[in-house]
Amino acid sequence: MKTDQLLSIIRTRRSVRVYKSGKVGDRQLDSILEAARWAPPGANSQPWEFVVTRDRKKMKRVREIYSNEWKQRKLEDPVHYKGLKKDYVGDVSVLVLVCGDARTKQVYLTTRQAADREKLFQASIANAVQQMMLAAASMNLGTVWVSVREEVEPELRALFQVPTELRLLWVVPIGYARSWPKAKPRRSSAALTHWETYDDKKLRPASTIQAWPKD
Image 1: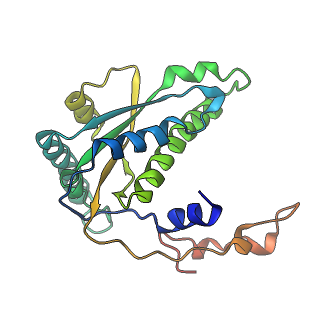
Image 2 (image 1 turned 180 degrees about the horizontal axis):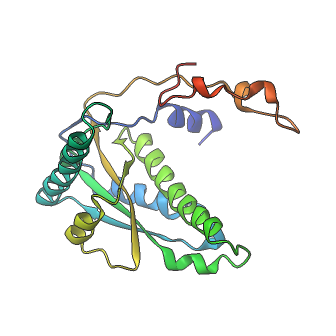
Image 3 (image 1 turned 90 degrees about the horizontal axis):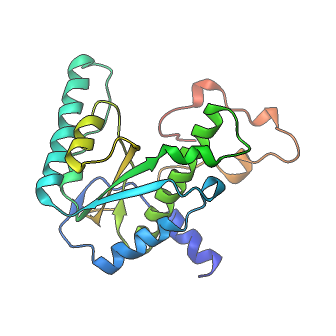
């Protein structure tokens, strides 16, 4: 694959939250998981574990779990809570529960601080998820990064029988997009690149930082 082809996939990947029917084939899924397997982990620790389901009942239950969490948070703060509903987790062909084995942090021999070990641990697994999503995008499949917050973690753990040794980090739905979201504006490379030392003139005012930057 040439660089421009890779960049095209990176630029066209989207966080898809509306899906249509259609099965993600086993070969497609194998390729997606293979991409995740070859992600770069700290100290080659390979901390990731993936629980994959096509079971419609499980997906329906995952949707209920996230729906209940959304309702509770909206009830607690009806004015300010702006969280998005995650009903789409029940509409896809495949759900991948992304777990991490925190015991692998002990192999980071040159990293002594707990916070540094945690960053390396989560970054390693995030690399795998990113490669999974790019592989899916190369097959015109939609994905979205769904956090596993503490409000939903116990029920998801029980549903998928995840052992206590593992951390639950994210859920990745995979399916066919009903529509592809438009690209949101991105900062230019020049705006975020600094040569030799940080250019203070490029430091963004706090007032300009928002969830979906328009500049």
